[in-house]
Length: 211
Ligand SMILES: Cc1cc2nc3c(=O)[nH]c(=O)nc-3n(C[C@H](O)[C@H](O)[C@H](O)COP(=O)(O)O)c2cc1C
Image (cartoon, rainbow, N blue to C red; front, side):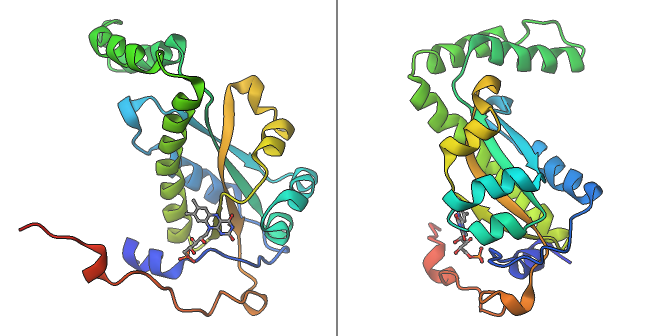
C-alpha cells in the first residue's frame, strides 16, 4: 500500500486487544523509522524508550488521559528529548559524523561554534522547547511506519510527564519525556472510533497557493 493509503488506514486507536502483542522485529522497524528522522543540525536530540513492562504501564495508567489504552496496548514508546544542549553533546555527535565519514575531527568547528553560541546562551527551557520539537519528527515517522506494518497506534501528549520521567529515571539520562506512542492491535468491536470517518480540513482550505 502507498503511504497515503497507510495514513488513511491509521487512526488514534482508543481500544486495544490486550491479548495481542507486537513482535520485536516490528518494534525494531518502528524505532528505526524514528532513528532515521532528520533533526535540526543532525543533532538527534531525542531518544526512544520502549516500555512493554506491564507493571510500569499500570503505574502510569491512572494519571494518563487514556488509562485503558495504557494498560491494554502492547508497547509504549516514550519519545524523550535532551533536557538541554551542552558543548559535549554537540561535540559527541559531530565527532561521530567526522569519524564515520573519515573526515578530520574539527572539520565542522566553525559550524558547531555557531550552534553552541546560539544554544548555550539560551535557558534550559528554551533548549528543551527546541529539542522537543525535533522529537516530533521522529514521532511522526514512527506513526507512519506502524501504519505501514498495519500496527495500530495512538499518539499521546495526555500523560503525566513528571511521573514518566521519574519512573524511567530520565533525569539521569539528561532527558525529559515529550510524547508517547501506544502500539498494539485494535479491538475493533470495542473501539467507538474504529468505524468513524477520518475528518480533515478540505484541501482547498488546507493549501494556500501562491502562483
Ligand atoms: C501530538 C499528539 C498528541 C495526542 N495526544 C492524544 C492523547 O493524549 N490521547 C488521545 O486519545 N489521542 C491523542 N492524540 C490523537 C489525536 O486526537 C488524533 O490524532 C486526531 O484527533 C486525528 O485523528 P486520527 O489520528 O484518528 O486521524 C494526539 C495526537 C497527536 C498528534
